[in-house]
Length: 65
Image (tube, rainbow, N blue to C red; front, side):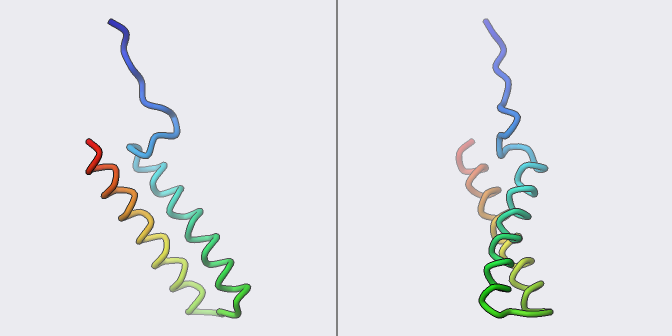
C-alpha cells in the first residue's frame, strides 16, 4: 500500500492558511486604499479581512475532516 502525502499547498497547514489570509487582507486593503481609505481605517480593513479569512478557512478545513 502506498503512502499518500498531502499537497504542499494544502490548507491543512497553518502557514498556508496564514499566507492566504495575509494575501486576501492585502488585496482588500489595497482596494480600500484605492477607494480612499487612509491611516487607521486602512489597517483596520486589512486586519479584519485577514482575521475573517483565516477563521473561515480554518472552519471549512475542520468541517471537511
